[in-house]
Image (cartoon, rainbow, N blue to C red; front, side):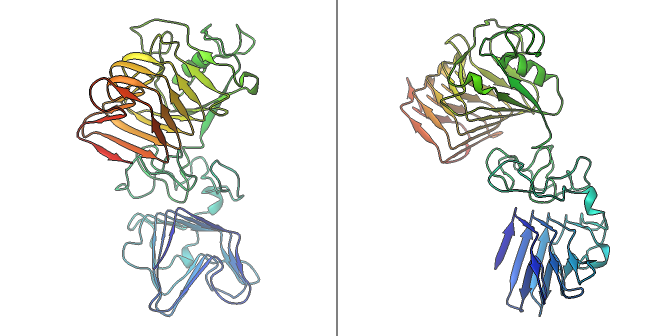
Length: 394
């Protein structure tokens, strides 16, 4: 059994025989290609499967994948699939060349057949985040939100790994990467001063503060990535504008009303300090927040010392330290949605219950992976985690 999952097979060549990208032979051979991108491969033999070739009753299941822009022969004849037949369950794929679609039919079982690949993906391998180069879906690509609607787990990630959500707008894309992860407006934070002068123009006031960047992101219905100028490295961003009773990030905590990535420069460089005056972030229902490579400290609130969340919260490569809740969840208080913690440390936080994380109800999921949870304190229950009706994975 061979499995290709969320992978990119691109730019490979078979000089004389078959299967420019993948070749499978023999009745005992069973292979599955799922949520992958097979592009730009070639074989010199005519009609021998520039993308994928199978022979002698090899069994192939193809699902959620893009196969296009592959060629065979010296004249570069389009040749995506040259297969003896695809197994049942080969569904929700995009095959560019209708003449070599392996028996798949456009509009049947969610398959899209006969599309110009140049309207589907970027044909150049580029750095779109993560550890590997990928072919990003183009804006308006027919592969966007065209995957199996049954795949709805928001904890899944694409080829690029943690923080790159596999299901973004309620339905998975075809291929190895989600398009919406990369559709991002960018705002650069240029001052550590906590200000709101109504303008993110660095020429106004002290520059663009984190608060101003979040207010601007809240007005953008698409994804916004907030970055930090290297001149701020090591200087804490201390939240000093106090206030309660509003949910627009104007005062007090930083309310997240639209999908946002806060991309720091490392836990020693990007430090967000709640000043022990309020919690730091509140994430609202239906929204996503990724905190990456930041230190979040000194948040203080009744519930959720650092973060209150009913949305999809992902913490990656970060340190959350010295936060306190007088009641529930020293770092995170979550009553619905998802909480994902990857490659991070939650250290020295405190609460009555759930010194680090309080998570309640069957509508909330928790994933903690490759992380350090240490020296957290609860006055009553759950020194680190307090979980009710839990869907959790450690």
